[in-house]
Image (tube, rainbow, N blue to C red; front, top):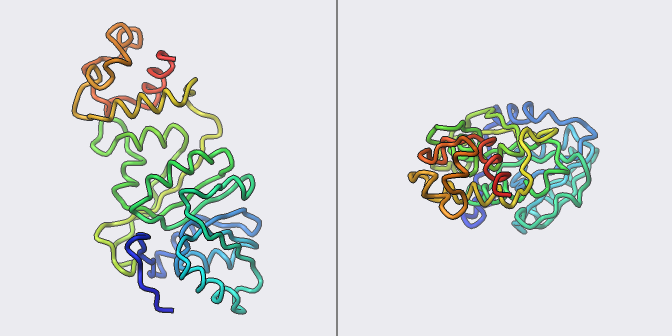
Length: 259
C-alpha cells in the first residue's frame, strides 16, 4: 500500500528497521501482556509486536489505514496472533475499558502528543507502563530537572505521576516523510506510590499552571492572589524564585498549604 501521510493526523511513518528493533527491545513485550498501540500507521511497530503478543489492541483514527490493516493482518504471517482494531481518536478513547495492567506504546502524532499524555494521566491507575516516540524536545521537557531551560509545566505534571527515562534518540531520516525535528523514545512508569501526595490534585494543577503561566516572572507575581508573603515564609520558599526553580515536592507543598 502506498499511503500518503496526512498532515492533519501528524503522520510520519517509521521505516528504519534497526531503530524499530531497538524500540521493540526496549518495550520487551511478553506474550500475555495487555498492550495497546496508539497510531499504528503502516505497522512498523505493530508487526513485530504481533509476533510476540497473543493479542494487540490498536487505536487508529485514520479510516484509510484501518481499511489497510483489516486486509494486511489477515495474511498468514499474522494468523497466529490477534489484533483488535479500535477506530477512535486517542484523545477521547477510554483506555480503562481495555482492562487492568495496560501497557501503552506508539509513535504519537507530534501535533497532539502533549494532550494525549495528559489524557493518559487520567487513565494511569490502569496502566503498567508506556513507551512513546515523541519529538525530542518534548521528551527533554518531560524528563527535565528543576532550574534547567527545558523544565516546565509538562515536567512537573508528568513527574508527579510518572518515573520517566529518555531511551533513544531517533534521527529524521528514520521516518517517511522525514520530520523537520529529531525524535526520541521515552519510557514512562507510574509511581507505585506517589513520592509526594497532593491532597487536592486540582489545586496542585492550578498552582503549577499559574506558576508557569509567565515563567520569566517571579513566584510573587505569578502566584499573586493564591500565595501571599506569609505563605512563602511558612513554606520556606523564596517569593523571588521563578517556577522553574521549584521541585515537584515544592509545588505539592504549596498546593497542600493552600488546601
